Image (tube, rainbow, N blue to C red; front, side, top):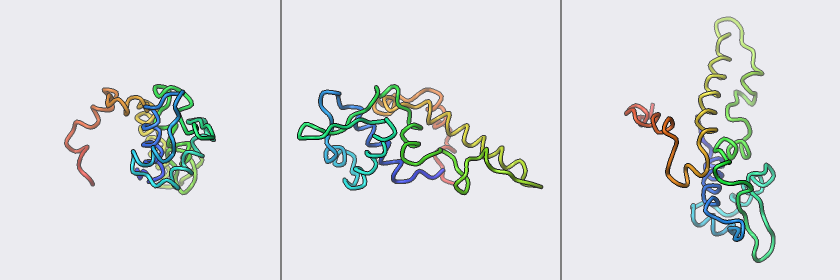
Amino acid sequence: MHVTAKADYAVRAVIELASSSQESPRKVDDVAQAQGIPVSFLENILTQLRSSGVVRSQRGPEGGYWLARPAEEVSLAQVIRAVEGPLVGVRGQRPEELEYSGSAESLQKVWIALRSSLRKVLEEVSVADVASGKLPKDVLALTRPEEAWQAR
C-alpha cells in the first residue's frame, strides 16, 4: 500500500486536533507548525475533512478547527477516505467492479482480501488510539514479527 503525503498529513492533522477542545479550536498555522505540514496544503486538506464531517470549523479571530466527533469515534479509515476516497482502488475502480478472465480470474478476490485486511486495521484504530499511544492489541501484534519491519 502506498500512503500519499495528503493522507499522511490528514491523519497527522486530525491527531493533532484530537488534543483541542470544542471551546478552543486550533488555528491552521498552529496545526501546520506542530506537525511540519505546509500551511497551503493543510488548508485544502482541512476543507476536505470539513466537507466530509470529520472536522468542524469556525471563522473569525477566535476561529479554527476541531474534531466534529470525539476522537474515539473517528477511525483512521474515515480520515483517509475523506481525502483520498476508497481505501483500495485498482486503476481507479473499486475491486468489486472489476472483472478478470482466464488465469487472472481469481485476482479480484485478492484485491478484495487486501481491502478487507487493510480496512480491518484502519477501521479499528481510532484517532484517540494514536494520540494516546495505546493501539489495539491485535494491531500491535501485527508489528511484532521481525519481518513486519523489513522492506521488500
